[in-house]
Length: 310
Length: 254
Image (cartoon, rainbow over all chains, first blue to last red; front, side, top):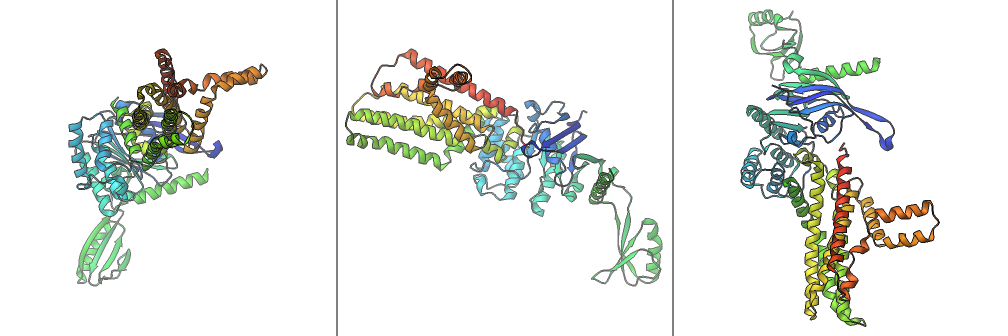
């Protein structure tokens, strides 16, 4: 199957104030998003994530390179008919009620009145705004605006959903609901492309990620491939006496247990026998993998070093 | 077409939910209603003064709406970033501009309809057939359409203040179109005269759309004159809106 989003050697720079100077926002980005996957575009603020999304939506023209949505240029109305989009910190027409707002976007997709009514009800239900249909958006909290924005992005049943920082500004419950919604969309066979700087959320749901820093792609691939699947270290909680001679860091927990940090699984067996022999018990064993955050910081650190050297 | 209609409806909805519109409308109706009392205080034909003030009210308050609503029509969507989600929908940029303009026209037409009906009623109450005013009122709407097109054009690339200045400048010079002709005869051939020619050719001749004096004095307006003036205004407005679409097409929303 061909890629849903195909970006090749994309470049964009913006001129500074009064045309003086320029800064490169996106610098030679190439990536492809396959059907049915959740793809996370990650990077710190100012990495070029939003600019990339804007080029995907033909809001900004690339200086060079190509963007294809379903094999078509983003200017093509037919390509945009197949996607839903939620911008960062969305702001919508605040003089409209939630239903009027969704109705407007349903009309823009050419849905007839009966379909709009049905889809709006379903979307409102899905994002948890039932009972607020008639409230003007002016009276909505930030989280509720985000929800109605999500409803707008999915109500026409698009094949591709593009979300710009969908979890920023949400409380933990809201973030979880957005995560669940994204996973549910994937279960329906949709493709989700989102940008985020909240790595935990991305780590939990992404099939693949791309890490962007200062407009350049630093890493791209499946999370499992990017992060070594082997445990980097193993944490063991011991209840009772801890025999001397165990290598690795140890820390006393407030509940009286001891947390041992071992360099790997190989070191586990001798520790278990030593602890048991000394009359203690193993209360827990946690293999620790590299987190997305580790990877992220490593890549960005490397980028900064490279920059410094050059 | 559906997309244009959806944007137009939303624009209309935004305008009619703004209290400023009702304030303008209320003041316009007060002027029309009060014109009879003003007429009593002045020397001359009372009915002429009612007609005069009435037509002026339709024109002036229509102009206020065209400028106030028009100049931020596109720029507000960009500033508030509502344009991002809108243009991510299957809506071409020209459809967005056309829809915004159509919505504004709908607002202006509603306003002309309400205030115009009040003027016609006031004239009828005084015992004169009001219908002689209809062609003049229709051309006021055409004139407003031209002014609104400029407001949308300016709004598509600049901020509301500059857009308002530009729109009002076009309105004023549009009514001073004859002065370029006059000026041309007085300046020596060369750059200045070419400039006069250029401005005369490019700026709208809004006096062509002004049949208020004829209507007030009950002069017959030939159908041909009316149709030619209406067509002139309509084509002019269309050309300016097309230009606005071209400008907007090239914009980036960084």
